[in-house]
Image (cartoon, rainbow, N blue to C red):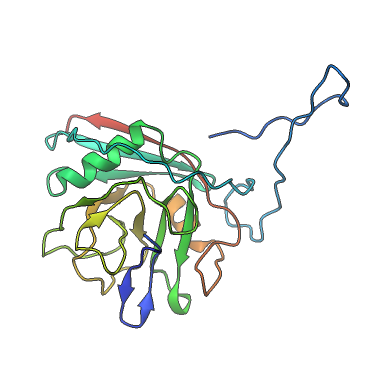
Length: 237
């Protein structure tokens, strides 16, 4: 079942590095094997993103949920590298200890590497959210477990907020691996989506991703937007 962000008359989101191999320099012989090189199509728009091959969907893996909570007294930062650039997420370990622990555990296992932003929602042509973290790449995948941690009732989803996607029939605060980043100034979303943190610092990459052309029906980007890696660091405040 596809994870959805349900807004008035709008389904906003879904269920919610490897470098390219070098081309063979010599023809194949009995002793030389050929190497399959994924085709890289030119991008449909000059949006600052690099052309990359469409990723192969991963099997829907079962991952073990991490119980290792982050230290809320430190700055826990997830650096997301994509073919559209890099950005950082400041994880909110104080207000969302279980959600951030789960996300950090998946990051340590390199779970997100090679996954995509499979949904770029722009209802009426207006920025709304970008969503990624699905191993299947179609909005139906997850880590094989869920976490339930309802966000504070005062939570509002404005530009830069990062939260977790869930299906409409799941409890408030349910999350797996799919996360979304709010690209609108503000949204009418109710406080039902588990809080993860907020994008901070340079947000050029997020703006580039939000500008990628997407199918108006499925919200899937025309050109692949790939998460090459997510890495976690912890700093003194």
